Structures are given as structure tokens and as C-alpha cells.
Image (tube, rainbow, N blue to C red; front, side):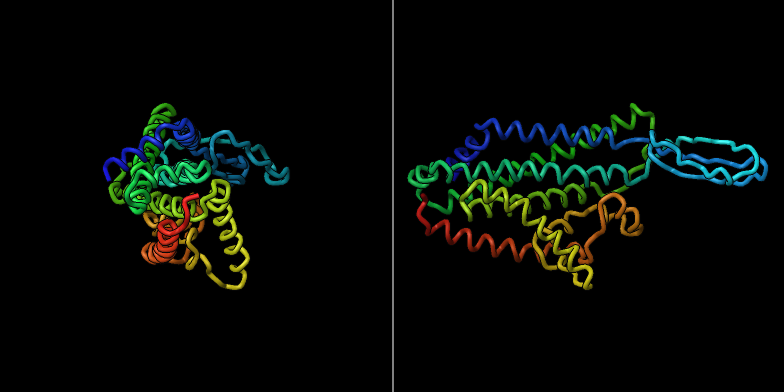
Length: 305
């Protein structure tokens, strides 16, 4: 088993696409983290003759002030701009929520390439020939995929946090004290990315086709999203029963942490599905177990080519 694990690790790390895709993901996370940090600018306009505030708006730095109607004030208008340097307490939390989907998208592609490559070039026949167990081969691929996902997720979180804190310092902003349970938050993000990895590898082994597997990983969530939009008009909540939606609900950590202020969560991470995280995880687990039961059965019995 150890020899098989080493073999699978070499396969994953011997191709340039692994490093290229991972690097692109981390760079994107860093760029979004840096430019996602900006002060809040509070613009006001006061009518000097009446003392009435006729315009007030908070926005990100760089936004142009909205036009004020000419009849809003009979006298002169006094403009005032205040830069608020205190960031929302949830800024770091939502930064992670934005970074994790990026890393799992690229990691899923890396692992689909890692698995489907052997079927595409039929090197899987050689792998199965030198191994005395098909189950060991599949289990080794799974283990390597999960380990790689955990490392990539931790790297993504590290880059996001480091760049965010650096941006806050460079831009002379303030981040309130963070009293969240970060072990829980990071652990749940890892569980989310590992769940996606298991789904990606399962699909790749099942269809044994690189293009089909990648298309499935991107098309199926899109179809679920369309179903959610169409059926929501009929008060039907398909997000409670669809695999990708259920997994995304479980991964929506920020919405759960700040559920006392759901409007804030919706602003940053979108409307949370009505299902609770444990229920969503249970729904996803049913799909995942079913997928892997079929995949494992067929892998043990189908001809390698």
C-alpha cells in the first residue's frame, strides 16, 4: 500500500499542470484579497440654508458621488467626505469564503487530470497489472487526492489571510478583534473542499473521460442553479435535495457564523439555502456514498481499457 501511495504521489507531482494550476489559483486568491480591502467612504451633502442633509451615501473608495437634484436646496450646498478606516469585523471571515471556491475549482481540475489521464492514455492497465489489488489502486488515488486537497486549502487560507492583513496594514485600515473559533472555521472549509474532491475523483473514475468529467463538474452545478431559480417561483426549494447545492450550503461557513445578521451574510456570500448545515451535509453524503458505491463496483469489474 505504501508503494502504491508513493507511486500515485509521483504521478500527481510529476506533471507541470499541477504546479501551474495551483499557482494560478493562489495568485488569484492573493489579488482578490488585496483589492478586496478598501475603506468605506461616507459622502454627505448639507443644505447650508436649512442645515438639512440632502444626500448621504456610504461606498467603496473611488466611487463617484451621485448627482444631487438642483431643486434639493435653495442655498449653497456643503459637501463632506469622511473615510472610515474601521473594517467590518467579518471582513477576514468573508475573505476566506471568497478564497475557498477558487482553490477548490482549480484543485478539482488538477485531480480530474490526475485520475482521467491514466484512462485517456490507458496507463491504468499498467498500474493495475503491477498492483495486486484494484481496491488499493483506487484507495491510493483517493488518499493522495484528499491529502493534496487539504494542503492546497491550507495554502489558500494562508495566502488569503497573509495578503489581507498586509493590505490592511499598507492601506492603514483597522480590523476589529477576531474572536471567532478559527479551528472550527478552517476545519469546516477543509471538510467542504475534501467533499468536493471526493465528488470530482468519483466522477472522473466513473466516466473515465477527461472532458466529460470536467464538463460534469461545471455543468451540473450550473444546472442546479438554474433549477433553483426556476423552481423558487413555485415555492419549491430544490437546494435541500441536490448534491452540489447541499455541499455549497455546508461550505457556506460565513453565513452560519453571522446568522444573527443574515443581511450581512447575504451581501457577501449570497442567500443561504434554507437547509441547515448538518442537514445539507447529510443530503450530500447520501449522494456521495451512492456515487462511490457505483464507481467502486464498476472499477473492480470493468475492463481497464
